Image (cartoon, rainbow, N blue to C red; front, side, top):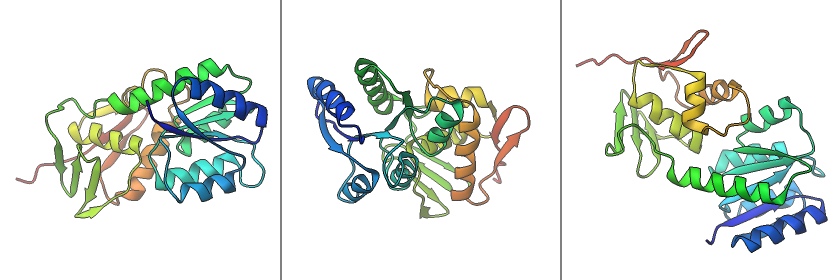
Length: 229
């Protein structure tokens, strides 16, 4: 195990305790005290995972999460004293993969880290694992390279956006409920609401202009496609 984890937390006691547990588990750990320092560090290269506190001096953890997600797909876990559902939903909508409320057990954090690494490494991309390139209209998906092209131009997508595209493209004209999309993209240990699906679809529609992801009102989403051959 040689994954590098960046911890952004202004409470020295929490930083030191979490680092001790993670180092014991075999992870490499780098500690950062504020979001500005973390964002500056991110320009030199991304770790394998970020752990972000929300209530940081200066730029808060939400803004840092948003910035990281614009340039990287690595897993992000938010830790925060804010335990309202709206705070968890906001963290998810900005691109985090998990949300842990303070006070928390370091053992629980370690368990979530392991689960998240395992999920991102082993999650199947489609119902047909032998089909490595998907093409539909102007969309081309290279599953092995995790690359997306729209009418010949490469499009930057997050890990979850990529998985959602694979699911919809693999099954054109099939309606998926929000609950099923949550299960397929986030896994059965998802902690938030189905608003996450709506937010992800909104981002895909913005990145892939005129890509025919249709809303099935009161149910979910469907990729509409007519074969012109």
